[in-house]
Length: 242
Image 1 (cartoon, rainbow, N blue to C red):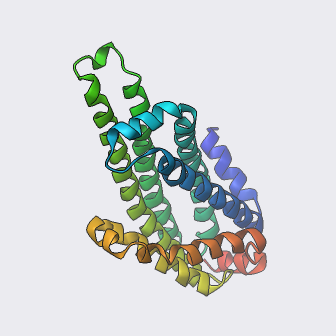
Image 2: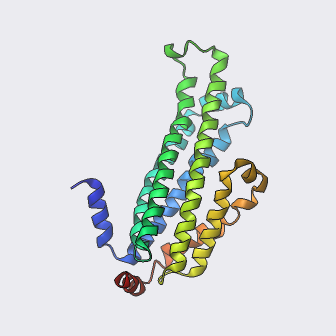
Image 3: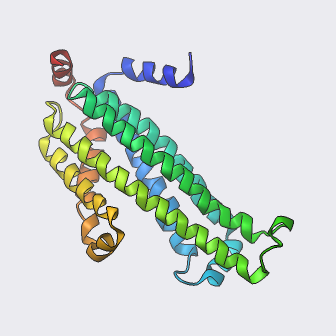
């Protein structure tokens, strides 16, 4: 039996309320590590438009820069677990939509995981090496900075997939009998805000207002899952009806 099969079997045997609380915990972990890895730590090291200063900061704080990469990997792994829990939790509402939501989010996570390589690559480049002798020394900071920009593009692409995921999870919550509909509505609004990244100029023009719905939507879902979980009886009734 594979590790994935074992994990899915354990999830199925867990009570709905416990699944919901675990999902909430992994949701919080995902949010914290992704913010640290993609925004907070890079924000302290990357100087917008200045490749030389960015390279200097990275080399001066290598451990901190590597920590951002580790945080992103943790975010991806914890989000995979969260996705599996959400799929099983909302399967009684609409199995097809729950499966589609999980698939869309996993595709987005694959893009995020691949993009994280662009974040750690600048450290390899700035350390130099014989294979980099084709570049002049003063060109290496610019190359490293370009890779950081590619990481941002990959993250923005992930945000679009995550926006679709939020809309679908919001629909599932709204149609469920075991969670408040208002949280579902808030999650759909959060997803619509993220979907503005389909066209980056629009997202930039609307920023930060396009991201404003994310806070009430995601935070309310996290808190409800951790504190309240779901109504076991109503979940089983809806599962039986399905």
